[in-house]
Image 1 (tube, helix red, strand yellow):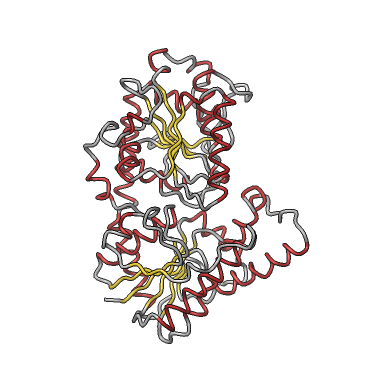
Image 2 (tube, one colour):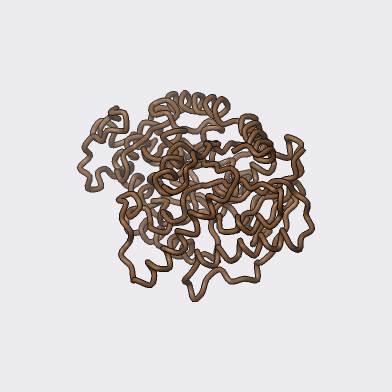
Length: 448
């Protein structure tokens, strides 16, 4: 048995938080003693396992600001995590052997104040690339900014690289992230270990018999048809998640071309879905029942969440599809589980997503995934088998895939079965538990 403490900046609702919760529970099941420390834990905006007694959670440093006049978010994230580490080491009196850190590596040298303990760092994605923005890091270009900001980022980026290298073991969430890690942190002569996030399939069991009506979704869906054909987008309300693409795809599906002239777009393997002209218009009975639910994590404290939801609502109105779209802020677990299960397909629109846990959740419940062909989804979704991998930025490609699933229920069911089999085989919680158990024991014994 190893005593493990997790340090995470904000224990809210998101993919990184889901991984930390699952990792903590996985190590508990393997017999380790687990405690979680965080700088922020809002009981009304968190995963239930963090408040129902399954995990011991301690919060410290929430009195520190998150920003200065809407700026310096990264700096304050560093400060908050450093404070959390110092509180843990100097004041908490918690005995532990291994510290499991993610997102912010700046706290790692301070964890070294506790001698003989080891540090495992889980890198979801290099922060310096996230700060550059999606378009800039993909082009390998720094954003245009002032000399002051460049100096600020230069210091933080160097701190990130150096402190990341102070860990005893480095994990990443996908082979895609592993490649980006090695390209980004060239001074670190280390190959990170890939540990895929997993799913606790049991968490959906209590909701498997619930219907839309049971969780109150019938009162939320617009003009709820008798047998709705629901497509679901499930992401935080952030611009990098590329959510407008889901709205544009629905527009194309319902009304035809949206300016990309309906040409066939090849996926990553060169396969081609039927053209729009072959698929549209849909049968009126099918078309009239199609709805899009755009759901995801929403935190009123995060200005981008508030602004982007307003932008999406306005965009849906301009596209003329507001009556077919529902926006759900931080749906509770029962609603989320039912939506994932009854959806005809999950629209996963981020480009170059680092991993993406939501596609696994959808496939585990037998729902095909329509994802942009890039990043982590290329390692989880099998094109033409468990879903479709589609060209980035092409609403027509998503519309074609949606049309196929809406019109061919047998194909949708077959994809759903194959998706569930794949998740159970490749991304099971048992496999995740065994890998984390090996990592923690190896770190404690001094193995890289």
